[in-house]
Length: 452
Ligand code: PHE
Image 1 (cartoon, helix red, strand yellow):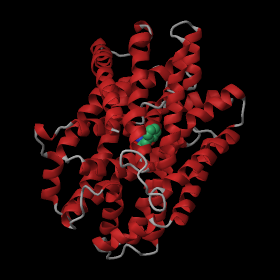
Image 2 (image 1 turned 180 degrees about the vertical axis):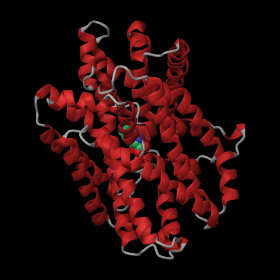
Image 3 (image 1 turned 90 degrees about the vertical axis):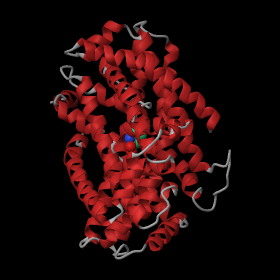
Image 4 (image 1 turned 90 degrees about the horizontal axis):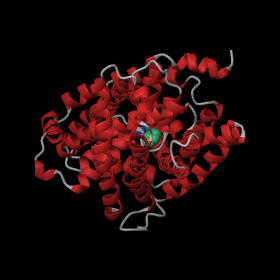
């Protein structure tokens, strides 16, 4: 059977799309980035704004991205080219998928370094370094990793090699099947860890921190961080979901599939919060400590668990694999395009792009030690990339994509694509995208420029 036909067959089950898209969405964004942003931005207020952003910005744009991918069933660049050839849109719109590709490329340069930390922690857990570790011990272990660029380079290189090999083989093969097993296992492990952390740690303070908020806590900084995180966590604004939409069966409801992905993504982030904050409060870890929060808190829980070595090693291995399934979707856009447009072998394209990501990643890992100089507005290279991608490029990409879908694509094409059983559902989506998501993103991108 030719590959394309067999892939259509594979992807026609609704759950396969949900697993593949969740594979992209669930990753370091949920377990590493979400908790530290929550800590830095005041807890409850951030969580409230984040949920609102998921519903009013993230979900409608996710649906738009998937719908656009399914309309043409090609890679994002060719999709836009195709629409412009059919005179549905202007050819200048091709800049949007390019921007998306560049954003994915830039995110991967630091994502791979952080995934490397997770790999390093597998080794530390298995070799028993977590056993009865104290808060200061966990902090020193983290500091020691960050001050050894050689070790970080090793893990970063290994992770990028894995990404290149998987993307080079063809992204769809086996990905959904892997996530189908991985995701339930991850959720069960997180549930057990959350139970343990709530029991052992300071559950009361954590729950108050997570769920109590007042209106004056909602500042512009909180809103821009929450929107950036909503887009980052759902993998929207850079064409990753586009590709999965292209493989989605026509009979399937985009609304229910995308809502399920968003719910799974939110559940994983919340569970991560319910693990980290009870521990942080019990062990007096500063919740505003930034990127170190997850990597300092988690060893403590594994250090006090009966089979901590095994559970800790297994957890960080799971985290590394979820990071891999997300990382793949960042490189896929350019690789698919180079392959389909210029007939460059997938492996060659993946190697070339992977090498460039790896090079920039070296600058990122050096920014945690030898090159910690503040380059721009008190931010080092890693912080610049993080803020630039999540607070400017992702909102900008998401906004342009939404404008394209909501204002330029004929409504009939969309209505057809949405196959919504109830027209109410289509109306809700269309109006939210047009009158809420887009204006909010315009403001946020603008604020992002000023803020960063
Ligand atoms: N959503 C992924 C995560 O939460 C990261 C990601 C961002 C993946 C953008 C693809 C595109 O870890």
